[in-house]
Image (cartoon, rainbow, N blue to C red; front, side, top):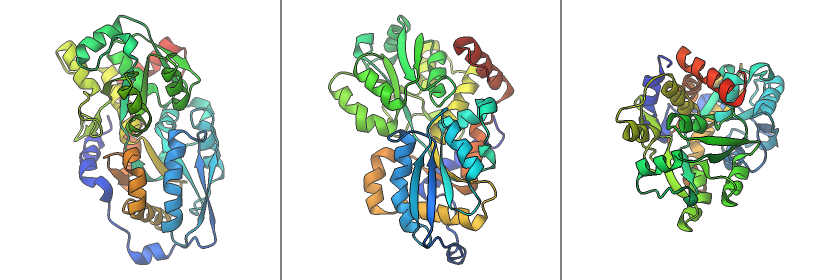
Length: 365
């Protein structure tokens, strides 16, 4: 992994909602968006997780950015965020009038997008990253009960499981690799957004699924109460360089816990290193906002201050509490480093992932 990874993740818990110094008023006042229209590019369809995240913050950034500009949300779905991210790269100027939503799919595209990817998010000015837990759940007909994870995994291993995803080299790769680590026989049905996959699960067409913690509480927990879904485990959460239980779902074991219970030893090797990278990009830096390369510090700092003020707004917190969960928001240089860490693979992990994608899904990256 990247040499700074442990240092940065160790700072996450302490950073919480107040990470980084507030900018001096004189610097923030130098930026003025009065009478301006700001374009927020969302490289996903309307109603998805990234779109919801973008629209959650947008009215409050209108309120707290200097000059109270109008923010116009533009959706450009396609290619696992590649289409919209390419558009942002091509047309965004470093004047603060265009910013973009980043997500796990953007980072997977950064890693494996090939010639279709025309952007380089490592050159963007990352404003913030938001952690989001990932919870895996199954249909009761699989035999899983949620009472004994070892017994549940053994039952799941004895059958073919159906899972829905956009494509192999998109954000769902983190979950697909977790299934592989745990020895589950999963057939992925591609071309499904998270919302469509969830609906297919509800119709009993899929047998295993994942959602972010916020979506799980909002849309899946009611299925659990009705006996139509069984929570199994989470991918976990990176803290001080170690994967621990997800703070939003502390009663569920993390992937490494499940592996150790099954095998009597902690996970190791290229497959595990690959999953840790997927966890970094899919959980620790799951969502965020970025400005284009070359954006001056005073504009970046104005955005950071606006988001920090948003995080103190009582109306926002009431609306966002379940969706954002108990995770820290990480800003500026720390957010930039989190992105770098998320897309920095060890050579052995990169080799394993490329071989796996080619052999399992015939996807060459």
